[in-house]
Length: 305
Image (cartoon, rainbow, N blue to C red; front, side, top):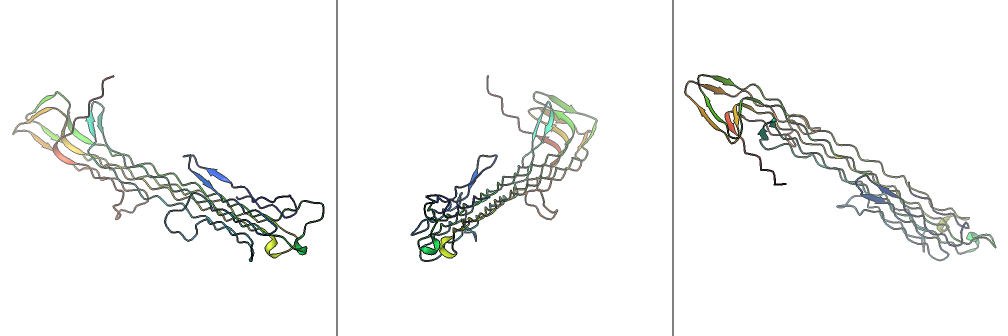
């Protein structure tokens, strides 16, 4: 939460409350606004919270004005961090190699936006006999409180994994294969995994209080605004459905003679995006492929060491 403003008559110069900072684990910071200084003639303005909000939210973390002809004003609450959207589902065919078929995971969810810090409260002013501090003591006037810092954005969900593939015959680089007088049947491919759910964002810091003064009205300092909550992390995309292939090859020579039967089974269904209903395709992984023979792209060669 923000720091409270100094009371009147507790210091020679009542500086506004210092900002508070939240540092998220990705290095992003949220800072509450500085409280306004207390003064005899004119209270200082509070500063706005950071980071600056995106778009045009209802609350923008503006600093409160200091007391002049009117009383000071409280700092405004900080804007909430933006919620991250659902990530994309898995696309592509995967790779076939000595370790078998390796599919494609759904895209991981992105982190939610950090909440903006609240604005600092304006400082009070205090000239006049009703607001006078005791003779011989500190003469500083009531200062404004600083804004609370905003909450960190929630982490995104983990991408859904891919379903297992059913491949009757695997022919790898350099193979020379003839299928003769045989029946080769692919079974059902596994369904892709559902994308993970994003975290809720962290809560913003509470508002602060302005400093007190001997008399009411313009002599008091004003409080800082509360920090905005962090945005919700994005739900992840679903994983690729598993293939069902009679033959899967990569860089191989394959011949299928007339008295051979090579058929696929049923491909797996792509996984749903996180928090998505079956009728909502956003973030769903692609379905697997069902073919009697599928030629995979050869993986790129490793660079020389």
